[in-house]
Amino acid sequence: SAYYNRGLARYLKGDLEGAIADYTEAIRLQPDDAKAYNNRGNVYKKQEKFNKAIEDYTQAINLNPKKALYYKNRGIAYGEQGNLRKAIKDFNQAMELDPSYDN
Image (cartoon, rainbow, N blue to C red; front, top):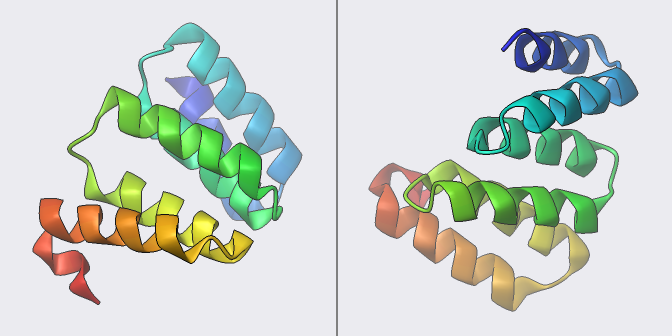
């Protein structure tokens, strides 16, 4: 959607609030778009709003549980919170789904 693409452009320009607004609208229009949840989670992670990031990554995983990237991103957010047990679990799942995530 146009909102998704504009959200990405705003994120790359450093307009984090604008990116969140666009991803939120993209999600409203297409609530089953796992990529939009993942990308909004990335913005929240950059803002160090780790709980919100984890919520969005979890929703992305619920919508597409076979996408290793979503587990990796959530694992990073858990790690930033100091929740290493959950981070390791997510990293293991990412590697199981895509062995290239072993790094």
